[in-house]
Length: 158
Image 1 (cartoon, rainbow, N blue to C red):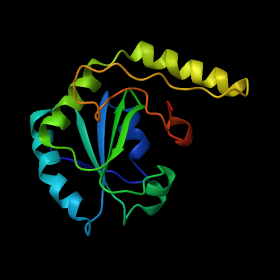
Image 2 (cartoon, helix red, strand yellow; image 1 turned 30 degrees about the vertical axis):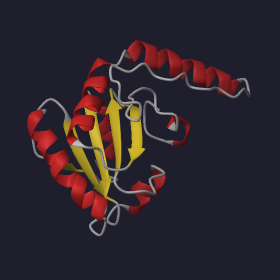
Image 3 (tube, one colour; image 1 turned 135 degrees about the vertical axis):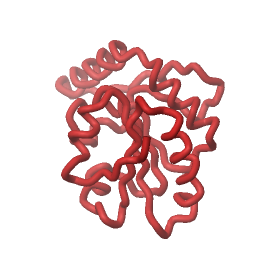
Image 4 (cartoon, rainbow, N blue to C red; image 1 turned 90 degrees about the vertical axis):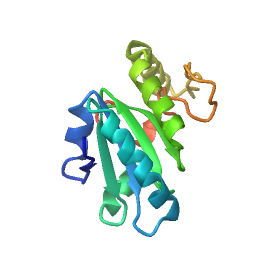
């Protein structure tokens, strides 16, 4: 499936209207972005059930700022409208595939419980530490789960 260009106008509807959405935040001048692009494209051809979006950070400055993205490339994964992964840097193909499997296998009921606990703690003026997500991989640097920075995002479900 070809990648989808994401803009301020369609970002929310794409993220909330699809079960799994991966978002690559990239810049034309960014060497690591150019290195990651063919890995991302290849993965998109293998997973027709996942929406692969791309945000050109130069063309979508307001969206990039709203998402608190400042390093490129940054990869985000959304499952059922919830941000479950957000990291800057180039992922090798096997790590990207591992991440995709983690996103597919996530227990979204547990993610929602964690979100509710986090919201309750915030309402009570307490600091909430998101528990470390369980992973299905030995790769410690790539973990899908409730992204720790969710409170700063304004998208639905977060």
